[in-house]
Image 1 (cartoon, one colour):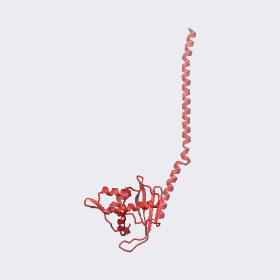
Image 2 (cartoon, helix red, strand yellow; image 1 turned 135 degrees about the vertical axis):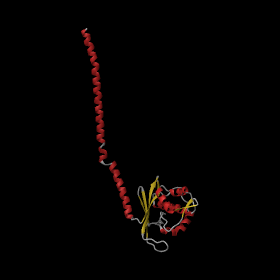
Image 3 (cartoon, one colour; image 1 turned 45 degrees about the vertical axis):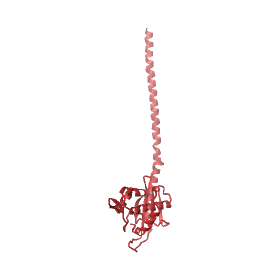
Amino acid sequence: MSRHLLKFLPAIMILLLITPLSAQAVNDLTSREDVFRFLEESLQAQVSLTEKTRTMEEIDEILDRYFTSEYKSVFLKENIVKEGGKYVTYGSDSAPYYIPFFDFSEVTEVEFFEDEIFVYEYFPEKHEGPVGYESHYEGLLLEKENNNWKVSEYLYSVDPAEMIGAARKKVQTDSEAHDNFVFKEPFFANLEPASYSFYLSIASFSAFLQNVAAMSNHHQEEPSQTFLTSGERQ
């Protein structure tokens, strides 16, 4: 996980005091700058939980702007501590499920898809100080929940080529499935027989009405002929 995060917590706290949290989550992430700002605010939201004890409702309101329900659940399970009937988070060596300390520069990769945004960065190995780690990628998956972009999954030691390749394959598969449903011949092939059957049904019904009318006329003529014949006999 992001063990190197703790080293920068003092700077983050200063930034938190200078920059207030947004009133609501960013719903329209269309550029790298939008994503960077959103993730910086997401990290501020997490770090702000160390300031004082809060009710669970207050904590949920702070995190809900930036994280899906599932992500909030795992983050709180790993980091929340009950104190005096309320809750607070403390820093630790592991700091699980905190936003990775991205550089937010050209080395931070952002991949946009229709329903997903991948953010990842390569972290070279580090063995100095109290916290060390091997070279690895860390990343985040952003998805929409109730039409709002939110952090949905933490990606540790990921393979970017495999991750992005799977996402692109999914987009291609969904697109082909849509094309097959809307544009392929089998979809339209059923329309002509149905229309033709409807035409035959109308034609048959019309013929039936004509037969009924003819039979009705025939029965109306018979009494008249019988009356004339009886008159002649008289």
